[in-house]
Image (cartoon, rainbow, N blue to C red; front, side):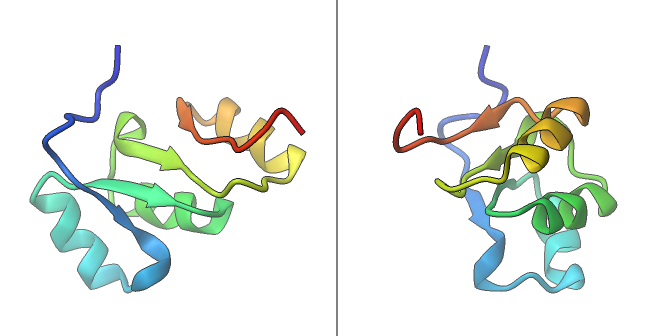
Length: 82
């Protein structure tokens, strides 16, 4: 079951990763679109719930995928199996 409501936005961290902004967005219920492990770690540090995160970079390092899985990140994107 998808926990990110379809009527909510997922903020793309790469556009502005400032922690005060991430805190405000989290406080207002935003989801987060993260393109890297560092971005995932940033939003987790402000208290975002793992069900509100999408690991969206189409090219991911295998070790980062393993880290994401081990840390409860459920959603990702893919352009192809490769």
